[in-house]
Image (cartoon, rainbow over the protein chains, first blue to last red):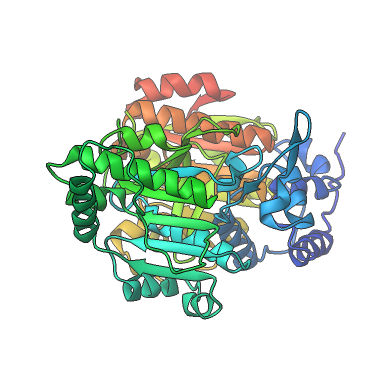
Amino acid sequence: MIKKKPKINMAEIKNQITSELKNGNTKDGDKKLKSNQKVKPEVQKEKLSGDAPVTKAFDMAKIKKEISRELKKGKISKPEAELKAQRAPAEHAAEQIVKGKRVRKYIKTGVPGFDDLFENGIPKGNAVLMAGGAGSGKTIFCLQTLSYHANKGHKCFYMSFEESEERLIEHMEEFGWNPREMIKKGNLMLKRMSPFEMSRSVEGMLEREKGELLIDLDPVVLPENYKPDIVVVDSLTAVASAFTGKEDSYRIYIEQLFRFFEKLRATSFLITETKQIPEIFSTTGVEEFLADGVVVLYNFKRGDIRENAIEVLKMRGEKHRKKIVASQISDEGITVYPEQEVFGGME
Amino acid sequence: MQQVINKVKPEIKGIEQGETVVLVIPNELYSQKIGGIARTVAKKSKAVCYVSLNKLINALEPKLKKSGADVSKFLFVDGITKSANPNIEEADNVMYVGSASALTEISLTLGKIFNSGHFDGFIFDSLSTLLVYNNPKTVGKFVHNIINKIKAKNMTAVFTALEGDTNSSLLKECSMYVDNVVHLK
């Protein structure tokens, strides 16, 4: 018996896609597939021996655009997290009552896909080590997070021990993040500091307070009455290099720095330069012990190319995915793909 | 050319929708057979995703057209042209990936293409080229990952390989993941 081939209503499929695109609902491909199921089962039963139903030519340019847009977004795997994000501002999105009346707050980074690696987000006030080799995207990740928060009206502070303020501004502008506007509004402050001045001042203080390890030094010079919500230190490696030969002083400084951020109740991101596939995630190892969280950024070499990946190694007070997942750096910043396995690089 | 197509067609006509098959092609007939395979898969599918690691797109597309394949149904994922010509202009029906070594990028792109819900046909050309650029263990992991994505979407998929690689560990491993391995004559 010859089966009659059902005609596919391509106009209907196009309308569905267009309408979903207008709703901004392009994140979940499975959902899109579901909406096509009226059409698909009819085709699924067909054998390859029979010809496919006659259809109009596909608009491949449109489909390609749609897929390219998807690639830049990263896959948001938790619809609940999305709903929460839509209902409330980021920092309140993950508010939660934990046993009794304790309320815990979390922050999002705004890096597409990265926040899906957590059940709720990064616990507010955590000090997070951002470890990675050259070209792994540590600075971009932190600037992207600061942009996200500065745009939400949060106070963000970037301590640079390497690049100048102007260079950082240019860097942000390359990604289209408009830092000058954030600075004008008072939501973003970029400050270049000399690691050697820092080291000299710590040394001087230690000399005066000989034998006293718990001196109360001010490891960061902040403007009066300025209380940032998010702080980035770029980088602890640069600070450590200024303390070469004075490792004990460096440890004291680092301890003071972590204590200072704790007192500020700011969430901090501390960059450390490591090998491309690190075994230790900071200069002395004390940093990763003191930090509440460690995020590792990878830049694997595979044949003639390099691939980026990211991993949440630890995050005190929060459940997170224990897996190295793919990430990409584009001209819009970093995108993380929580469901995408990384091939090679580790073997 | 018609003769070649007729040879290919009976050997893959029994493939059902949702099946994944490795087609092992004699080395000397490879470039002839690929056109027939593309034509047959295109004819039976609404839209086809074609991964090309062998031929530059400006050589492949006319060749497939000449074989009678309806290339308007094809979205190409090209892993070779960009490494030969980094300044290649974007085309509406081609998604370029950096290299045949960029397995994560290829997998990511394919995941998004499959999730778009438009495609029910898939051609991977070829496993043998993948082996030239990557180690067999990594390729095995990659192919397994792709086949799982294909299976989840109930797509019909054809992976091609050269007869010369029949005894490679990859083909042996692939025979575990796919529904069938067909040797073309």
